[in-house]
Amino acid sequence: MEIHVSKVITFFSTSLSHRLMLYLSLFMMIPLACEGFLIYYESNNQISNRTLLLSSQIVENNVKKLDTLLGSIQKMTMAVNSDSTIQRLIRQSAIEIDRNDDISKLLSLRLIDLGQLYGGVFSTYIILDNKIVGKTSYYDLRERIDIDHDLYSQIRNHGDFQTFIHYGGSPIVAYQGGTVLLIGTSLINRETGKPYGIVVHEIRQAILENMMQADFGEHSYSLLLKSDGIMLANTIHSNFNNIFEVVREVTDQAIGTSLEIIEKKECFVLVKYLTNGWILASVVYKHFLRENSRNIFNILLMVITIFFFIDIFVSRKLASYELAPIVKMNTYVDFVKEGDFSRSLYTIRHDEIGELTDNIRQMATRINTLINTIKKEQAQLRLHEYEVLQAQINPHFLYNTLDSINWLACKGDVKKTTEMISSVSTFFRIGLSNGENIIPLCDEIEHVRSYLTVEKIRFPDKFNYFIFQNQSLSECFIPKLILQPVVENAIAHGIRPSDTMCMIMIHIEEDDNIICIQVVDNGVGMEISKLHEIQAVLANGQSENNTDCYGLSNINDRIHILAGREYGLSIASERNNGTSVRIILPNDLRKKL
Image 1 (cartoon, rainbow, N blue to C red):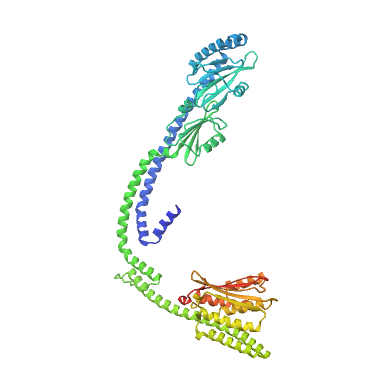
Image 2 (cartoon, rainbow, N blue to C red; image 1 turned 45 degrees about the horizontal axis):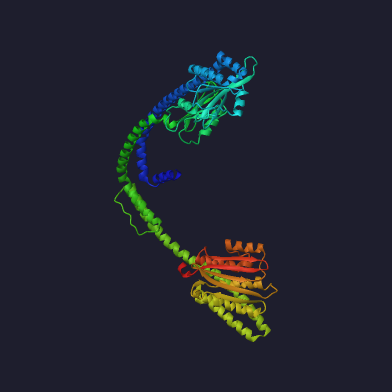
């Protein structure tokens, strides 16, 4: 829903033509829509109220039918307790035990006579403690009365009427099918005041459901409930999720003797108590109440729709002339926004829109000129920044190498001094690189190897080194002077403080057009706090106050300038286990420049 609303808002907010058509349409449609809404609202209320009133009358009639049935049961029970013939036969059954079958038949005949007066839709049974039975219905000549002992005791020992629902047939007569309701009470000896049997009335659930039937529309239904919420009968034709919610609300709410109407989100619940405390609840859905008002709504909707399309047609014609130059200007500005200044924009109008067109064209020309100037200045600025960073690193190298040569000369080792001077010569020859900022990878490897040769002469017993390079990457161009400062840091901070022979490994591979250079040493490593400090400097940029990681930060900044911030340098280290520096570069830096 939110997506559709967003699309509608975007449709109107991105076009003056759409908004103008909207304004004209609203001007015509709002009065018509308001009038139609008032007509529909009033007619819908009247029709809904009348339909709800009719539904209430149907519920009242159903309650009367059920009360009549329950009244007949009560009258039948009173007749059984007061009928002299029945009382005489019951007394005889206690004396003439050998005549039980005859007494049972005479009781049944008398119950049938009484049933013709009060019954008709229910069966009545008299069951005495001595197993003598009387009944109003015969389902089969062989039928036997076999009531459950617990059920018999529960009815006998309770003075009031008890109601039970039994699924799968009668619990009294073995040959009767279908769900039945039992309404029973005890038979009291008028002389002793003690119970000596029970009278039970049996009603088929289908009879109750037939009395509850009412046409309240699709999905509507009725429920017959005990006061504790037990469902006795219903007219539900399909599964509904809100049945238990209706039962709970009906039984929890205090309801008087008159019909109560409970309004819910989607339906009304019509509730009425029967005289015996049962509850009849009928659920009427609101869409049923509004069925008759839908025709009115459909006619109004059709009229409004016809006027809407007429209004759209007229408003488009009116807006076309005024908005055509603005559409052209909008298209031209879109091209300018994307950097395309080659398009032309002309108009023959001499009003405010024509003046605006000329101003936009002149502004676009000036913007194009300014963009070209800024691009040239930015390119010069990047080159200047890179040269400044590179100039900062060369004096640092020169100081360290001259210090090493001085140390060898003082020692008098001419052969090693010559070898060192040769390596230093190679080092600075590649470092100068005819003023180029990027050099082939093979030259950078030769550059760092010359540095390692010098350091190996200075510290022959401190480390060995190994360089692994994928030869296919030899001609790939990378920023110059990025390996030597990393190796220098490894020797100065990781290898020199170590008491054992160490190893420096330089590993160069390519993965998915990315050159990955790793410089790993097994020196003393660094504390976790120091590692976090260096990582913070690399993430935030150059730090002139932190001399320990100046070289690494310098390399990282130069890579960002030449290749972009997605490339650069990262570091990992563990105390007494060494340090690993990883450099990520594009495989062809020349395309970035």
